[in-house]
Structures are given as structure tokens and as C-alpha cells.
Length: 266
Image (cartoon, rainbow, N blue to C red):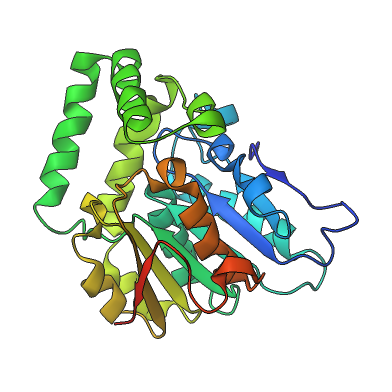
């Protein structure tokens, strides 16, 4: 299976750096995390394309294929007998990462979920199913142009703006969202034995039920990025990188608190 992944494994420094697996959001790709290599130079990043995204556009999105993608990425990050990595997912990637972590106890040092704390069992699911039905009417390319303009307007600049994708990945959206709305409830976190960090923007609609998700965790930290929306990995990369740096224990601004974020616990 073509995983469309990238990593720093195999470099001289990679063998001693903490490992971080990054999973992108809806219609994005591994390229979403490209600018983070400069922001996290002391961390080995392993990035993936979920099925139907990035280099895997056109491939059917299924639960098995998505979860297998993370299995392979964690295996590569861990290497031969290496330490457990940190797994981080944004939006769709966060929900898939949550599902994977619930099925693989003892595999992770931390689980970081960015913009993935809206409970799909609520009426919110109707909104997303409605959007999926609207997509063929509007057209994926037009929808992508609008979405990318919004992201630029909210602060995506430089490399983050350059990697914004076209409409091709929208083909995977109905199946991907159906998986989330059917399976990704807060109860999954009851089976996760790694410490969990729940990250949301102050104005993120996916922050809606963060306390439900926090209450299901064995060990949790809740982080809110001020003035950020659901698109925070592109619009607030320094703050997101600081949270990730703290999660992997790489030091720097993450030690003793992260500037520009609000932290708490359940």
C-alpha cells in the first residue's frame, strides 16, 4: 500500500531525536506538516497521507486503510526497539489517531489531538452530512478555492499557504466523515493508556465537547490557542509547534509552559 509518507529516519541525528507521527486533516496531506520541520528541528517527524489524500488521491478511503497507514507510520517511527513515539492528528487525522490509539495500548508516549473534540453523536453530525451532500452541487474545485481563501484570510502565510491543496481530495470526504461520525466518540479515549493532550483554537467549532473528551481520558491536558480557529496548524504554527515540542519533551519554549496558549486539565 502506498502510504505517501515522509520522515527524517535514516539521518545521523534522527536516531537520537524524539519521534513524532503527524496525521493531517480533511483534504490536506503530509505536506501540511512540511513547514514544521523548520519549527521542530530537534524532532524526527514522520508524516503520512491518509487514503484519498496527497499522493494517494483517487484511493478509496476506508477505516482499515486509514488505520493501517498509522500502524506503518508508528512502526517506522519506533524502528527496531526504539522508544514509543508521540502520535498527533489534526481534525480528521485526530479522530483516526484516536481510533488507532484505542486499539494499540502501550504503543505511544503521548497522543495529541488537534481540533478533534466535537462529539459526532450530537446534532453536529447533520451539519457535516449536509455539507457532504452540498459538495457535488458546488463542485470540489470551487469549494477548494473558497476554503483556501478562508485559510489565507485567517493567517495561513508562506509555506503554509503554498501547500494548500486543490479539490481532488474532496472525493474522500464523505467516506472519511462517515467514519468519524459513526465511530469517533469520546468513549474511545477510555481505552487510551498514553497521556492525552487536547488542543483547540479559541474559536474552533471542534472545541465544542472538549470536556467530554477530557473526562474520558486517564491522563489529560487541555490546551487552548487564543484567537485561533480550527485551522490553527496553518494559521498559528508557532503555538502548535510549541505544544508539540512539549509533548515530545524536546525542551525549548514548551518547558514550564508555552507562550500564547492556555493550559488546563480536566
